[in-house]
Image (cartoon, rainbow, N blue to C red; front, side, top):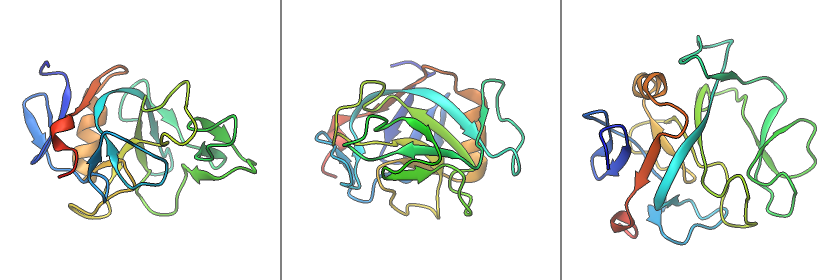
Length: 170
């Protein structure tokens, strides 16, 4: 592990010498991630993308991509686009990346079950804004807006996100 790694601890994500409080999956951390289980997957993930709402934020880093009205993320295990960015219209189950609430104003995507997605192993494991402190997610890791902006400005593609197996079941 290095200082440039993001490491989940019981107090939050440790990154570049700081602890950023966060929320994880409402059912905790798991070593057996499945679609819809509400758990954050244990393992070593990598940051693969950075998306932002250009109507609400300035680009937080030079590599950030704007989220448009037709941007989606497919969460249908039976669809060829499972756990990938997609565009509307998409007849399969999906999440809209452009939401009315601020949760996805800024999204860091990970390589959990990506790019070669195995159906049912989980999708859309993102870093995004939380609803409120410690409010469980569907499996993502969520932060305050200020902390997420800071993380997005400092992370680069390939930054490791380490979610220790030791936290599974807690």
